[in-house]
Image (cartoon, rainbow, N blue to C red; front, side, top):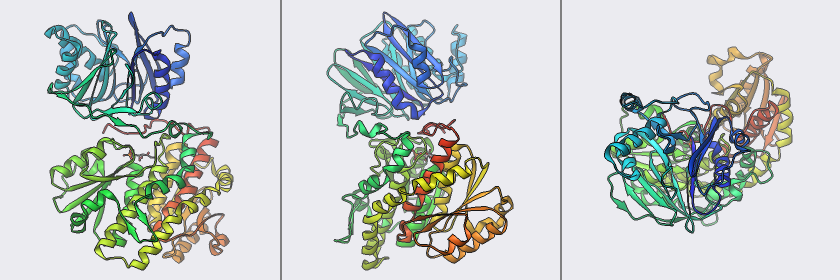
Length: 612
Ligand code: F6R
């Protein structure tokens, strides 16, 4: 939610900021802006995409070696030029970029208005920079002190960078609840919401912790302090990200690239964590707590959106294989409903970004009540990864398309390993069955590759149904969450209304929607409920619905009744979501492209939802 980038050093700042904003644009894209300092503070900002900002700036002199940039996902105030960041203070001496929400901004604004401040935007951010300015004036203190005092007065979440017209040799950055990475070069520093704007310049980074700020100087020295004014020794880490991972690599969109990366990233998520030949599974994080997890009264899976869908698959897997009671909770509901939870519970928190505000809050609540927290995150060093007691990274690599694809598959892979590891430890799975599944799991990347080879066929089907106003997705068992995920993918990138339902539930209401204009996507690969799914397909056909069925290779029965069949490689039923999701991702992708939608940056969405 909003991307921020800053630089101080010897290079020209503008190309660094612009490239950084383009890389961060997945976080928010309703307006963008930069501020540079060369004698005076020059702020350029524009509603729209980073490319609109680029055009807006085209003829300006942006020569400078210090500056900040922002790409916004609106919270306070409409996405227009005035509300775009950076914001200037009243005197014009200070400027700020901000990711997050200052909850008590209204009362501070009233007080500042009483002191003669006027505001040019509707944002909480403009309030914060004026609060800093007022403190600096009242206390006659340094900018650093003013920032620290101000941040101790505000309630909410933020990652900020502040630049002072009168000090071209320093930037101050702080975080609470929103991510911030400091890149350390040779007498130069980079600051960003994630490492993507930094990786091509330096591999040395420090992830700021909550309630910490960094003061960085052109001379090459920097320090990090807590908001309590205590200096901390910085933990410098090496970035593992590569530039190729954050570029499109010849694909038209990041989403397509990420769909195609799935065979590789599934293999990455399994590597070193299992061996079929030797019959072992070992998730480092799980191993350490295996006894506590084995004795857990229940496992609660909490997440949002696509991660919640993978959580539903986790519920089926863990209950089926390990015979432990599992509940799946929307983090946004769980955190507010005073759940019954205690030290005998284990919470699995799933999050691609590791920054989702509701998931983080759900974790805090469960932690307060002594539950064990196991994080399943993609982004290394993210907040959820850090607050969890233990966890596993999914190793999907940077996911830049706003619609989650490869993150989902790797989350499911990890959940399969978790279910199997608990099952093995509890003795709820026979060794022979375990081996069979592990062998098949090793084969899964190849089967996902085969599913990707169906792309052309899926594209043809997309062309037929691209103008449908509604879609239904139906599946049973493990394919029900896949149906939900397929419907979400279509909704979010093509803006077609789509619903996912358990196939048998259709009779209890949604069947009323079916007529000759309704495409119904059936996930029909389940061996265990095959006859039942056929009955459900018949029910739709009897009402003239159009059936697109995802079936196992060689299926002949469904071919007879469905309008279209997409044949995916058969696999162990518990692994099937990894294969059946692929045509659904491709279907939504092609429909969105054909409708002219912005696939990688769908309207109103942002990649990581760091606000409630
Ligand atoms: C959908 C999508 C969102 C995220 C959700 C949770 O394609 O991307 O629904 O899954 O916002 O995000 P994370 O996994 O980062 O917590």
